[in-house]
Image (cartoon, rainbow, N blue to C red; front, side):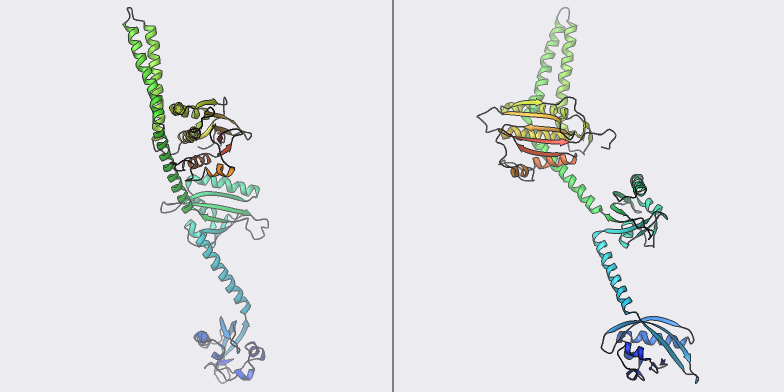
Length: 477
């Protein structure tokens, strides 16, 4: 008990011992003696509140200091009453809550660390109660989705924040996870109120013990920056691939000129023949018509070559469509004919008939085949003791994938490690090479879901081959 001036007028033995004092050491002393300086004002204010509201109970939590200098937290329930002489006195009951306070502080600190870690990693957490369709979010999850903090969110509200083009897919995924009671993982876009788009990745775990009411717990990560970086990297790779294509076209200029000049020369020859057929008396219209058909065929052939060259030289976006790998090989062969003749290389084609289609970008796959063929030709440049033979094969591997290979009779690969290093960026065995051709080719093949590899032949030379998955009808490009 303390009087109106804050002097201790009574204390029980337990209360005194709790603070490390004897009863005699506290009687007649200011109650502020058992409070640290920082709590003096609060202690005085609490006593004043009781004195101003006599007969009403008030409670508060406050820190005290023991005789040995250690601290303890107490919950105090107090009420002011009047004595027989009319003087007010404050009765105070103290409950030691030090352990609870330490636990609360530890929990608060842990939550602070968790919130900070989530903020730094841009990863929030959530719990989904399917029965009520409510979702409990962490602070970071609210920030990612752009909602004001609340005890919980209705799933219908969250769905509206998902990009309209992704909503149906997200609903299918969560519906299947709920019906099968399995973990799920997916990525989708958020359409924010300001029109901006965020990319998120979600992983959720199905809770086996649902006594808490939570059916799934999970994490959601803001991967917008990563997606943007991936897009920029892809654009840079596309630009670099374009440069290598144009460079390859420069090297193949003689082959292209030869391939175009042949049908053009045939056009001129056939035109002269057609004129002769028409000059006859009477004109031979049957032969003239046949010659005109040959002129049209040769003109189209020259146009096709120019069209392919322009497509290779143009800088366009990726366009995937169902393709026949044998057609890709034949189109490339028409561009490298002169290069084969110039280096005295015998080309042997071994295409597998009636191969299934692959889903790919025609120009990019042409670039891969051109690069492998040119590399094979150059690998045999110093060969003089055996025929310079290049073999291009297509077929199906044991896994049912399309496989295309280019086999040369050149100097071969020194070691398996060397074979793998050939695909590293800026690694080249050519004195003037940039070391980007095979690296870009591997990236192109990987983007098509395949794999590009190199191996040493049993005899002289090496084989480069790439695999591509089959096109499944109805699958998105």
